[in-house]
Amino acid sequence: MHMIIPPALQPGDTIRLIATARYVQEELVQSTEERLRKEGFQVQQGKNLMARHFQFAGTDAQRKADLQTAMDDPAVKAIFVMRGGYGSHRILEGLDFQGIKTHPKWLVGFSDVTAIHGLFQSEGIATLHAAMPSTYYQSSEEVVAKIPGILKAGQGTDWVLETHEMSIPGEAEGRLVGGNLSVLNSILGTECFPVKEGDILMIEDLDEMLYHVDRMMLQLSRAGVLKKLSGLVIGGFSAMRDNTEHFGFSKDDPFGMSAEEIILGYVKELGIPVMVGAPVGHIHENRPMVLGAGVKLSIDDLVSRMGH
Image 1: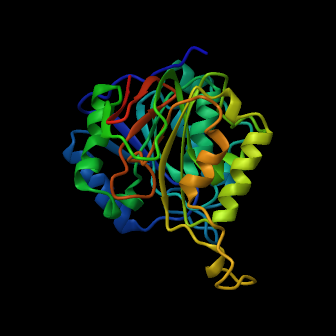
Image 2: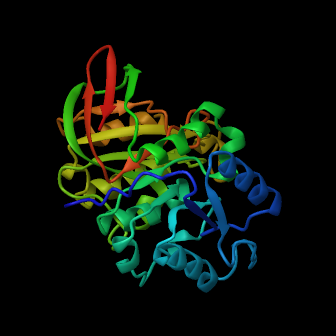
């Protein structure tokens, strides 16, 4: 599939702030605007950015309208989703991509935004998987500072890492897709699911039961998704919970494997390279990465590389 890579941002370009899931606080919006203006950008708020409907940033219709308007506006060069939580998947049906394909722009976010990333990749548009303003406080300043740099360059940066002892060596080339494992499972079988033959899949997650991870990997396996992959990138699986922490189990009922061990159990016989411990996800070192772009994954016993 031919992918549209949005153009690099120039000084004075406009960034639109929207919220597609949980509601946001005014202080967060103000600090985000200040940060982006210091980078030389103009900043606009979506019409409904400060709306609230129970846990959401306005009704489904309001959040969808802000996303569609930002996609359609030729003056907007990047769309920043302010925070995740839950709700992005609720507003994606029937979005019109004509405007954004005519005037491509970057979509920036992660976690719940995985559903939007997936839809954009299915439509042939690259996006930026990166920390959102609501998570800047838990990300390293170096990582947050990379976001405007990538937007100004119009392309991602290469990774060179020490190979994790659990990684599987090998080489692969393909389109990089993925994001949050739970969200990916929730969009399986829909127009938002991004995985095509030969893709390199990145997955990460937060605060899940270990048996949930197993169930999700089993679902991907039985749906035929894993055998399509040319490579796998395993990011942070943070604050995972075992059965011993869950009602209905005793302290003597552990699941018996870590999240990484569970995942590797489903892919180790596929003959593909697997990068374990990638610096992406709900972690301090959540490095920005361009989804939808072609990458080369190379892993040996000492060094793991991923580059465009």
